[in-house]
Length: 433
Picture 1: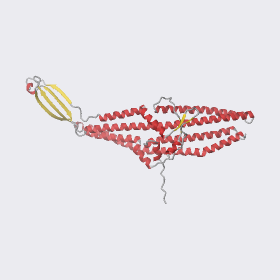
Picture 2: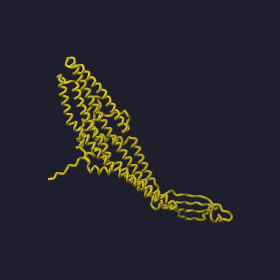
Picture 3: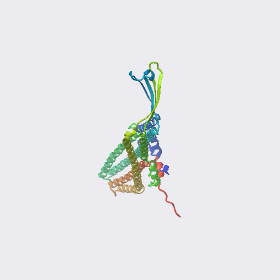
Picture 4: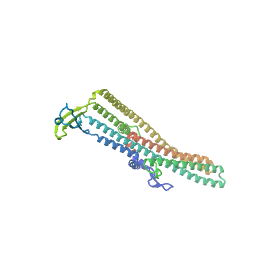
């Protein structure tokens, strides 16, 4: 079903009058370009680098702190102990013991920060994929506008030839001929504007793909009108579990919890063990050794530790509230996007199935009336504008529908547009006997 929707676009391998290949805009093409963007875009490379650096930082937390070595000497007065008996060369090693899980708590904070940084990189990738998808549909819409403009210009050229022949035969007026010339000039200028808009979209596409700005790209054809989407519980449930911004917020909550645990551990004393020896410099003989155990006294700063803990607890509470607020915002945004998608779909169907056929019939009637001298050329031009507008509105509605769906893919945390069509399909009501 989904594949059929995509492949109803114009046939692969077609070319426009410029000779450039025309290809349908499909999910496969979007995924192919997304892979290229993921590989080449410098912002995504930087995000991967930050995530890797955060991972190395977490893995680099020491399980044991570096031991300390000390070396010194003693000078005794005449009333002091005899250096030949006590020793006057002093050396020792001191080591902080990894007790009470303090270092494990620090490593947990670093690991949580690394996971958050990795999730931020994934969020950036999803944002870039959304932007890439949107600019591709904008480019396809610009290509469709250019095609319609060239078709309209060609029609005007043909009609001008007919008007000129009728003018020579005395069955048309000079005013009709001037009106057609003005219409051709207006359409020529409008076509130039549409070509400029396509060039702008192309520069944006090349920026996302990390290509040179003026790199050419194939003419894209829009897909058909997408199937209807519904505000389904499945879609909401998936979004609240997988939306990239919510995943980042959840990682920030986890990191805040890890910091609370580390702060609680920080007020526990650090235990150290030290080994010390003494020798006499005269003969180098060992005189005595000792082993000591020490610890700091954090109770003197108990109030400061409580403030540190209160700080981290408030940050954790704020992170929870931010995540809750974001979850509400996501659900509201999903409803808004689906409403916009439905409106664009209905508009496209209206113009395609209702307004366009009538406009085609009206143009045929106007042309017949003009050639039969029963209607004026301005009636022909008006009906032609109605026809071109109907075709333009169909293309615009299709593009807007798929652009909104690209936003919805990010909002729901989905992998691609095809998955959105599956999860957002309206549920068929059960038939009761």
